[in-house]
Amino acid sequence: MKRVPPVSNWRAPTWSWASSNALIWISDTSKFHGECKQKQIWAELEDLDVQTKPSGALEYASMRVKCKPIRAVVKPGEREKISGRTVFGHILLDSKAGLRWAPIGPVGLQLYWDDMQQGGWMSDYLERKGTFHVHMLVIQRCRHDQPVKRYVGDCVEGLFLAPRDGSEDVFERIGLFCANATEIVSKIVASHEGSETKIITLV
Figure 1 (cartoon, rainbow, N blue to C red):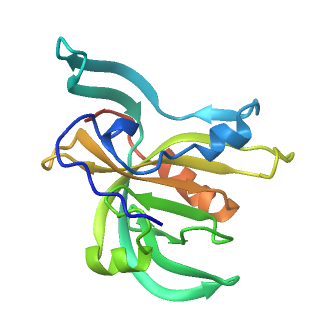
Figure 2: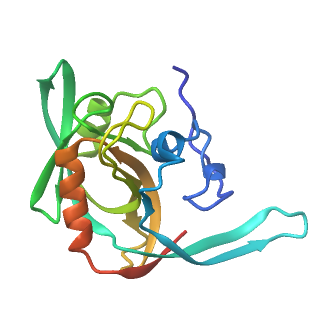
């Protein structure tokens, strides 16, 4: 797969598709659960601030979101095999509930880091980056008992965020996650329910 160079000059906020040259992520929950009446949105847009030049080009853009950010720690892990898939690392929610994750497969938690070159290997990325702290923002959840296309049961999706310049309430998007295994979803949901409701700014 062809590697995509990072954007050298600011042209959009981190939460916008226009901020990256990489492929656009299509929400699995919206795609496969779009008609499901049990789909829930767990983040609420409070305000959108956009400033443009006379030409229409963006000068600045931010959004304020009401949500429950979950503190988490991403750690490299042993390259263990589960059901034939390689597990590359672990995520600790609130430094307690541990989640194993892999790029795809029956482990049930997929994620992608925005600053990882497209076509790169997740194991190489983690070995280079090491352990780091993030916030997880659950955007939507769908819980149902009957099959919806190829999905059954719980699923949650959202963003990985990092504080901007050490701020407590201003964040940048640094990645994406999707969980669709019951045990993993239940841990994320429990941490979400135990987190404080805040209004944060995404830039």
